[in-house]
Length: 137
View 1 (cartoon, rainbow, N blue to C red):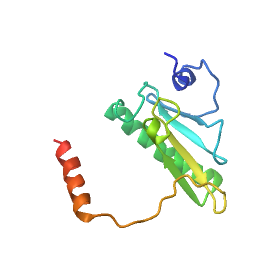
View 2: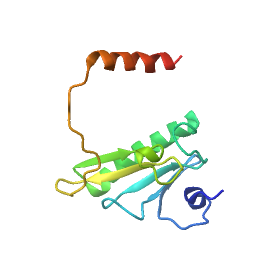
View 3: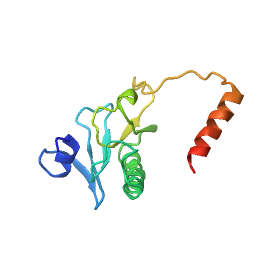
View 4: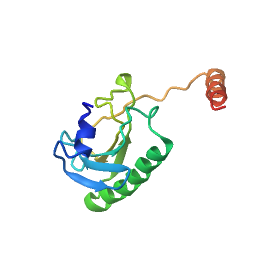
């Protein structure tokens, strides 16, 4: 497999490891958006949320909570962005599921997500909601 994150997990590529357990590996991003930017990944390869097992996703989510708390304690940011991107259209660069933890400070210049609030068509919103709800069964 030619996955850079799998190579990091297997110690084939060096990283600045911050956390590891039996399912999860977390390391500092070498192209940080802000000081303290780190990545949380499952050890088992899964390209996106659609491929990851529920157990591995729960482990990644739990570790993300633990690490976001540690980032807050260590760096005292005024906020934290959590990002998990799936697919090229969502700007996913490395095809191995990962969660970005990005500490934020007022005036740091980052504009990770910027959208304007525009009221939607409530009937269309309800119809799409029902469509998604029906897909659960």
